Structure formats: structure tokens, C-alpha cells
Length: 218
Length: 218
Image (tube, rainbow over all chains, first blue to last red):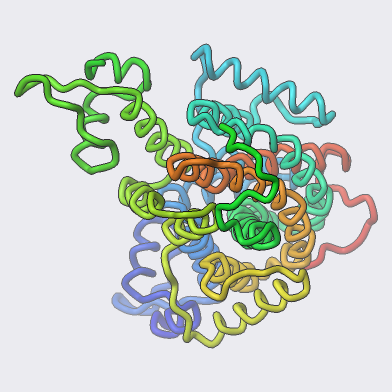
């Protein structure tokens, strides 16, 4: 197909497609003359993946390139997952006393749930930094929910692993990891916001009156 | 305290603090002479909130300003939550046949779970766009997990609503909403990644062999 058709089928404007090609996010078309290139389903698929990462996942062009560059080579679902997690989370050093303390709490959480999590899984740092930020904000009530969040993640994880294992080709592994982690985070975030609104309504609309008459705590 | 102390206590460099003040994210200090300003705990708290939004939540300076500008006036937990959800999710029009279809599926999900979700909750659009992106990618297995994700969100939501209701002052409401939604998303994302790794390990390391010998599906 020509550029105009690729643009129509993908819903992405031709200038944006050319930009993605220049940036190495989408392969170049095959030249049929010096000024004419043709594209196929491979290009359409690549565009959809890039759009998912950037438009829905909120990644930058550089972030999307890093994810795509690191994903191709994984030989198993676990390796692809790990590569994606690295690409999605910038490496963060430790050596800062408070962060080390927060990392130790992450380790304690992992042990208490009997999870197998490799020592270099970058989610450890993400979680530790988030715990620190919550503490600094004084949002200790949210910290009390940590175990409930962990239990909820655990409940879904086995079905997620099943999805990851089911894939056949490296290309399918890339799609599954992007779907589960980048889009999955958006999905979970949207569902949480709706469920939160519902829970507030169920408690009486959150109109500022406290049913139990308790004193505000913080 | 002086700028040097504010910087030391917050861990944020003085040039960055001045930038936040110019951008209206942190209030200016009180001038004690034309070239000398003093700061107090209010400034330290504002800085911690901005850092949480930008460094941990990954928002842009403009995004952080929008969240902070929209949060102050909420009179109840539900209003503050709604203001935060609006600020965190850019408004997205519909009128696109596929998106309307995806929005109808979001509505069906909400009904099937008996959730009360206002018609203008922006999470509806976030979820609809994410469902569309998943379909376009052909990641239908992840769509099959939608109900499991919704159930997990529901399980934690009542305790989250309790946290939101417990707050006393508007400032506390702002902190709780940032903690639950911005930092909460990071927290949940990190926990999901660790639980996923654990589930893959539990299934035999995700070494690419399929225990059931089934054909790859997609």
C-alpha cells in the first residue's frame, strides 16, 4: 500500500508516520521509485505498536524506541518481560540511606508474600521510591493499603503469566508485554478510578460528612 | 529557613526550587530584604507534593500545575477526587465510531459490576481508548483479563474510599488524592511487575516451553 493508505488504515497522519520512520520506530517502506515507497502489514503493525506505546501508554519517542529496541531478542516470555521492565524503568542507583531503608521494606514485603523476584528487577526501585515519596507526603494511610494492593496484584498475576507463556513468536511476545505492562497499567488505573468513585458513592457520596463521626486522622 | 536549608531538607536543588516558584508550583518565600527570602514548612510540604507528582508520578511541570490548580477547592473527598481525575486525564472527545463502540463496552462493564460511575468520569475514555489499542494490537488475551482486573480494583476501592473520607482539610484531601492516584498507580504498577515475575517463575521460569503442549494462540 502507499503512504496515503497506510495513513488511512492506521489513523496516523503521513507527517507523523514519516517522523516515526526517521526516528527508527517504524521500518522504512520499500522504494519503488526514488520518490515512492510501498508499505505492508508489517508497517501497519509497527505503527499500531508505536501508537499504543506513545498515545495510550504515554511514553516519549525515546522511551518507545528503548522499549522496542530491547524487546526483540528475548528468547522466552520471562526474558522478554524482563527486557521490557528494564526499558520501561530507568535504572536507579541506591546508596542513599533512606532509599536503602525503603528497599529493605520492599524486600520484606516480597518475603512476606513468598514471591520470587530477582534482585535486579527495577520494580523494586520504583516501589521503594514510591514508598519514600508517600512517607514524605505523610500519606501513611496509603502505606497501610500496601498489602491489599499486593494481594490484588498476585491474584491477577497467574493469569497474566499464562498470557505471556502462550505466545509463539518474539513479535507476539513483544505485543503481549506491551499489552500487559504499558496498556495494562492504563487499564488498571482507569478501573481503579471508576471503582474509587463507586466506593465513595456507596459510602454516601463522600459529601464530607463522616458516617462514623470519627475525628479526621492524619 | 533560608533557601539553602529548604534545599537540604527537601533534597531539591536551589535552581530547581526557584524554577518551581517561577512556574507557580511552589509559593514564593517571604522577603526579608530585596535579595533574601525565608521559607517555612508550607514551602517544604509544597515541594514534596511537586516532587511526588513530577519525579515519582512522571507528570510534566504543566501537568503538575494543572493537578495542583484544580485540587484546592474541593469541598468533599468525592469532589477532590473528581477534580484530580479531570486534571490527570486530558478531556477526550468522542464522535469516532470505534471509540463510541469501546465506550459502550465500558458502560456494559460498569453495569455488569453494578458500579456508580458518573457519565463524565474521564476514566471511561481512558479505558475505552486502551481497549481499542489492545484490539488493534490483537492482544485479545489481555481483554479476557478485564473482569479480573475490575474485580481486583473493586476489592481495594472500599479501603481507598475510606482513606479519602478520613481527611480533614482541603490540603489533606489533595495529599490523599495524589497519594492514591498518582503515587498509587506507580505502586500498583511496581507490584504487578513483581507479581508477574513471580508467577512466571512459578510456572517453570517461562523458559518458552509450553507445559500443555498447546499451539500458540493469537
